[in-house]
Length: 283
Image 1 (spheres, rainbow, N blue to C red):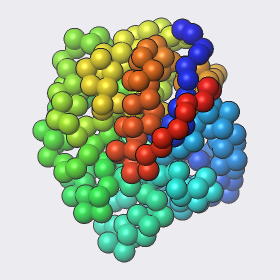
Image 2 (cartoon, rainbow, N blue to C red):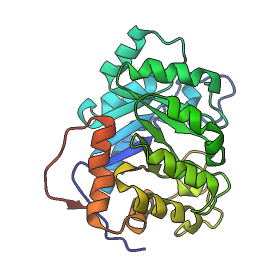
Image 3 (spheres, one colour):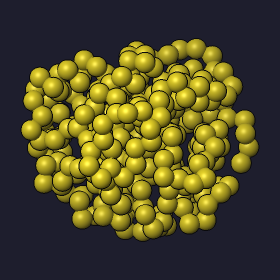
């Protein structure tokens, strides 16, 4: 893997979390670092040559999206968006307030620590669609075939986390991965190319078992791929190097035009950023 990926102006990190020291967490929260993260992330973003970010509500804060909202404000509303956690009782007033604050999606975290049950998701997807939000789904990719019809019933755009998050990595011909490709083929499902370290069995430097899936996704539908750092990599020891995570995109999408599409053009469509026309700058 080379280290010469050129990062275009307007490149977006579509999945980061921020935390705040002393912020109230839900009972039995799995992970809630007591750190003031916005300044630290700004330094990471700038060092990598990124200019845009999507802050995803951590499970530790439940449906209190205030820390994430503060993060959007601190990083800049123009270049930052948020993905909230809401339940099916959320009011229109709250959804409008969140929209005004920069939120444009609802997070469905269906792994350990998630607080929204499957039987609420259809109602939530319908509610947030009225505010032009997408839904963001994280689950064990092995379960995609069992949930395919439900996922397809949701209106609007759907973003699936972390290369499908196959907790036990599979090959590109596995039925569950083929299901992921079918979902992408609908034209309204996007996949984040991120966090291979969370599930890889072979590990560094290339996470080749998970990278094979990322390469297959890019080859199949580059117009539906997003990139994300998953910063600050909580519950991962040792934490991966952010620059190496970005440089993996060169392995997954070797062509500079594909990299620009994934880093800039696709996030503009999902998150509503303004187009940027400028010369690229090296990371």
